[in-house]
Image (cartoon, rainbow, N blue to C red; front, side):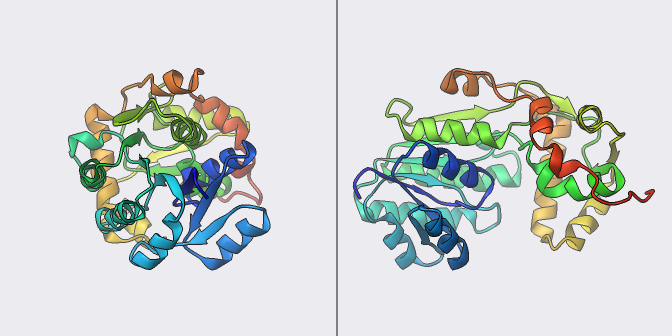
Length: 296
């Protein structure tokens, strides 16, 4: 099993695309899931898979056996630093891990907002471990519009965010996965951090216009108060911690800190990052109305 890559969060945004990428390249890797059902489906598709629990050191030790490189990603939450530290400690115990590629967050180094602080704490744990590392710091994902707003866009032609007129250099998850794969398969990008952005900084109004152009119908952006966002998050099962952390991130972006453009995708992949227009065309099926729309 020498030379194997372990992909944590294999069913998440980046993990799913990274699994697809490495599988297409016929690279030896192991995909780590949080449910036996998902791991079983992966095995049925010919993918070496395992089940991990970040709070269970035994499952992490089992997953690390024979692993040379680790792709580390954990859902944002107050336990992220502890959970990722558990994975790092398992990598140390395994003894053969030569690189940890961490999927972090935009501007983690600033520790200016809650999500940045928890990711930076985890980055420091990795740095102190003595294992060579590469931190990937992507901006907000284009695919968040599919994951969180596809239903209201399909049904009502609107998405609601407390984003004011802020600009964000959204990045395509597929680009993040391609960067991760390239970094995992090389040895010349160690002990470095890369900010990952798309090719342009867009307002949410511009996003709505781009979606309108692709879908051929009007899509609107509605700026909502923070408290309404909290209520919407709660109604969809989100925690108060997540709502507050996201509002803090939105405020950070409103202050102008999400609009910078990075050259890292171009530098690492040798091609420009995916545009929002291309993303919208590729995911048009997720936004198309499947039932009569009701006026909001």
